[in-house]
Image 1 (cartoon, rainbow, N blue to C red):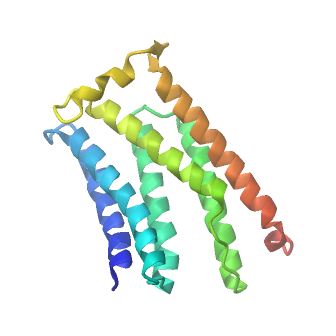
Image 2: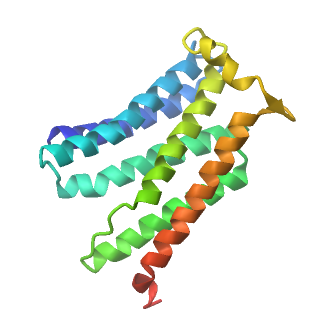
Length: 195
């Protein structure tokens, strides 16, 4: 297994660690900080595995399948866990997950027909903003713990109890997620012609 593929597998393991840390937040000291660190490192592996695979021509069938799957597992875990902690509205999470499953479904249909659907620029922007949004809320959880206490200033300007930055990030992420999903479906509508 080459290094990019090892990083992809490590992202799945880091996702498990992230979920466990948030699940044990009542009994595990610094659980929120650990969860944020696990998520941040996992997000870095998302960028790094693709960079290394392209730079050193280490693209494999395993990587083509598992890299986007590991990304979606990480993002879905992040949104579901933060919804469970009442930081992100459930309906927003459902909209985001619907888009992710729609795109995955289209890729599976394309793959069955021997077509590889590349990631689009809008989808990459969507992923970047999803990561930023999730990190913002994870640091919000960890803001009372020593590692992230210095970032507490990000959460002071509030509207009805929710920090303005958080509201902005949620709506921007939701908009990019929905628009990129619709764009992806529209550009690949020929795959759905047989339905």
